[in-house]
Length: 462
Ligand code: GLU
Image 1 (cartoon, helix red, strand yellow):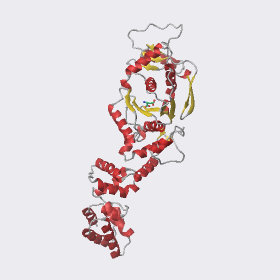
Image 2 (tube, protein in one colour):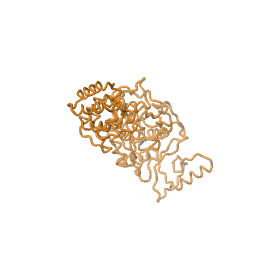
Image 3 (cartoon, protein in one colour):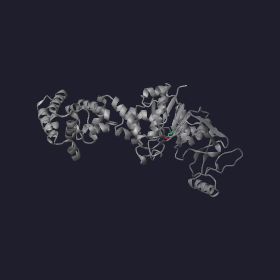
Image 4 (cartoon, protein in one colour):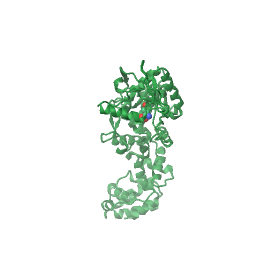
């Protein structure tokens, strides 16, 4: 058996973090088993689906490196197939046409509520041996309903949650195809998973209650069941369901906020799965380890501080030449033009150790392109009368040397010696004047990346 997994986002917005996580699990599981990973676009909610969302989803998948072997397959291009399968189910006695109008259904539910019953479809168009059905009204386009078993149980061994059993008595005759010929989610999913020979379905646990219907449809079709794994929701750092209202939920937001894709993958992987105590691992390692075991049963909490820690690790590891264009793009969003990628690379090398995101890197490197404005307090604290004469002298020396780190270091040393100062007395003053803050990496290296005149102008401020 070839393992085949899929991710099936609805294109009604950006790629949600929860969907990205199930995409990652599906992808890793397929890759672990040398199988295939399929991308399906569930666009049957025509009113809310947009091409822009499809494009965003594809871009996020590409950014995360979740490459798929087939797709994107669009459900709205498969309407004829769903209709044909629905007809097949009618012919085999597993589905039927229901001519109830919305008004009748409302009245049915109203009466059930009045009797204190749980609302459900009462089966009035459900064919049974010996039952006389009303004549089909000519002016109503029917829906097609599943003839769900009336008794018994649906049981499956969930890859995440273990054995789950739901009574058929709790679920009614689901609509498979609406009057406009568009299938419902549960029906389209089954036809697709069947046609696409999907063997393992990872998805969010909001779909647990849909699974019994889906299993009954698979059975009615005589199709082999895939295995299901329902992953718990992701909680926000406030302990409530991660949602748009409570902070960022889309992958794109993190891309824009300066996170690296390998950090996102690593962090998302750990949010619901573990491999021993491993916290930092590559996607290749994950593929090697991800066999569908050790998936967490309880919801994980989104932890921005941990994500930042993971990202800081990957920023430190990243090639400077890779970081440079990312920082360039961050600077560009602020209207800061930084053309020299080689210069940016060298600056990234110097500052990446202290940054959690490329936004923080851009915050640092901006001083190389935009004049800094030191705060009055920093000036008062660090640019004291005790160091002023040394700063004037340093400025003169820097104006006269060859502009490179070694010469700058020599000029600094000579100045310290001449004024009997120690580096910790002088360096913060230089930093405040030139960089706008009192702490930076090694001052000679930091200065060497400035143009000489920018440093001289900064030191003029004393
Ligand atoms: N379109 C569904 C969703 O985004 C897919 C669920 C499934 O994987 O079956 O939740």
